[in-house]
Image (spheres, rainbow, N blue to C red):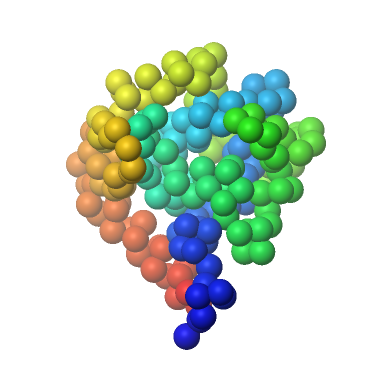
Length: 198
């Protein structure tokens, strides 16, 4: 049994199957689109809408993150932890290869060409570009308000957080096979957790 001194807080370890490298690359993509720096709140909203867009278009996520309702709207939890530097660098060092954060501003570590962001398929790149074209002009506060008004899966909370399931997101998007998709994602997480020995 691990001693308290050796225990790693659960939120510093990403959920099973979370695509950290892809999430870090997504952050770099949006920061570059914003001209080289982007507010953290705006970034995490764009990431959420990108995941939502993937679920709408393909019935499958890009990042396999966990969703939560927070006071400022819905978020991708592990991606936010990566941006905040909460994920242990010993476990997931990839974040520092793509982004840095100063206060509430996120910047790419260097200039990235789309060919450097090798985790994305062409269809996924199209989703990222579509999200930027639709929402990239909005400020952080505008995106916050937009997410409150346009995400039926979101629950208003004054403090703390409430989980949002994949089936709730799919239902909000009008899908009829919500629970099947949710179970498939859970199955992938279970399989990858076993393979990784978690």
